[in-house]
Image 1 (cartoon, rainbow, N blue to C red):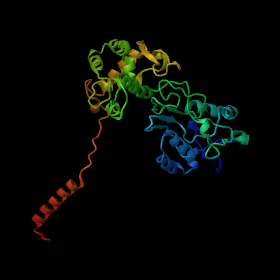
Image 2 (tube, rainbow, N blue to C red):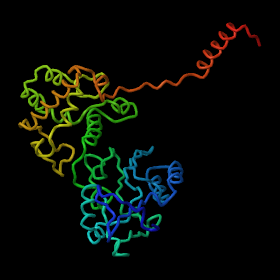
Image 3 (tube, helix red, strand yellow):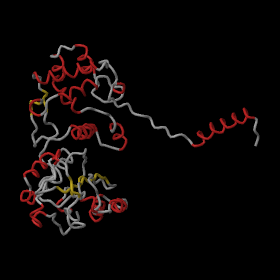
Image 4 (spheres, rainbow, N blue to C red):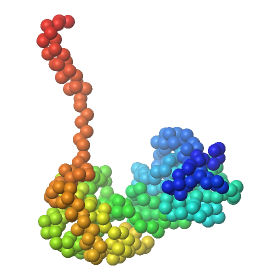
Length: 353
């Protein structure tokens, strides 16, 4: 439907077609063809501020974050992607009952289209086009230290900066950080304790494969204590000796992975819950309660039932991530065997050129 979006009938996702209403999904990125032009313009930028200006002028950055550094030493983090112009005030005014549920589950507001212009996507004077949020409503920061993002929301571009006060349709604020985000930040913090980050030092830890959840759970010997209470001495010895990484050669990763799959969440898992004032260090304090111990026991039993040795390297365990080596052969090397094979065929058939 023009100006509304694609009509959907999906009762399992609470968006069923009913006699009095239906759902339509409108895609802000599906309404433009500006992405490639935006990228080409960004490639001509002279510094991070120029890059952001070009990105905003292009209006075609899809659903991704932007991090950049320039030769002056400035670093940029921005989520200036194409976002529907749905403010929190509009969402509060226009959410239906089911729309509120979808927002809580998926982070996307379901608006009441029967209210007409009251619930139509808005417009900003500084936006590249109507229907999307303008740059002034989007989060960004330029710093002299460092920034990062690991597919979490924009709220914490580093351990000191908090970006707040933006429409919730962009992402959450004062919300739990994923272990992936905490790991990326920890890489940088650990490096800066020893000196500056450089391209060389970045390469040294870019693929270090540390498992932040394990590092947090091991604090104070808690993970080993949970395992010890299962009585599974053989498996616990492997887990205690594990290097805490997910390298192909790491031994014990599969035991930890199975435990995490079965472990409870929230306050059932952590003794120190998430605190917005300390997002990179909370939650923490693995509990050794019966439900946590039982999760570990079930994980060990699952590995045993699957016939996988407790001391199997991660790359050899089912689901393990053994990297594939990419080989780019020299063209001359490729041609030589083919000519040799051809000569052998000619020798067998007696044909001559």
